[in-house]
Length: 468
Image (tube, rainbow, N blue to C red; front, top):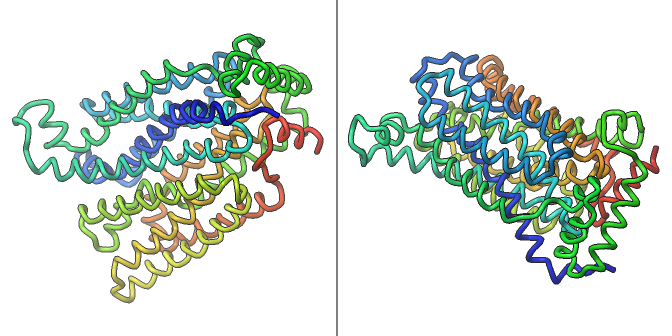
């Protein structure tokens, strides 16, 4: 039996480093919510152009995720994470200094490519270094980092909006333009700090040992496994296990999808990835301030409410991280998605009733917080865990790219279409649509996806290959 306690803290350290990519993902995704009004006004954007401003980064994410798996399989998980850190840095600096709307779009797309890459490679890396007993919790660190990134973006937006009124910098300077005159530039540009930190700290971690085995670098793999599992004997044992399992499915390429035992989890991963985006969470994160303003709040109050949403998101994700390996992935989904359906229906009724009755905005905040609680403890906590562990080792990068492409395609469509939904169906109809989309997701998890808690990656691989 392999002992993991002796190197538990080292494994957690590696997971935390990879999870910084999640923070950048969350910040880049959520920071847009505080800039929409100012950018729309400054560049005179209509609803379609506004949707393009929000959705263009997601288009970059689709591009990034499309190549991330292949790059990770060919060059390694670590190098792709380093590339994503470079893209985040270029995007943040470029957005802060962009002179035109088209230039802003280009830099947002570059940042989106970084998001797409890191959304695949960071959880993949964590799953490949984590022992099965705590893999769910460690991969959930990535989701926790995303929520902290959300909260960090909301707080940064709120603080910079207040800071802009203090006029700390001299007029007609670059800093005055970024932090006072056009504060949205500061909101987008502050991502530079964590992006550079991510780049530097990545230089301290090793490559994924499972990737090293698959690419016939067994000596290096033994060295890494030995650090993870406290002894040379344990390292050699883990290398042997991975080699025996990977030998069953041949070389990683698209032809492997002809194998029913591989094609089925890939298709199911695509389904839960894209459906999860149509259940409303990203619409709340992107357009939360705008939706709150529609309920009668001022811009500052709307951003404060969004900070509350972000705080609940973080605290609930911490709870999910603690219980995901004990309760299991599927039970969390059953509980959480049921609560999401109820919350979304009540939010829809709130907006429908507010057209007739003067309902207090505090009711809307409570319903939004309930929705975020149920989302964070279920689909948000589970999705990256499942996608990082449900595929065979040799095809994990390619399969996660396919699932990630579906996830970001759904996210892009939601970001692009939400302004149109709100304009044509109103908030009430929009949130009712999100509620309906929860039902097929529940069915797939119930009938098609196995419970993966407590199983090694090789055991999960055997499940699909034997089920064919």
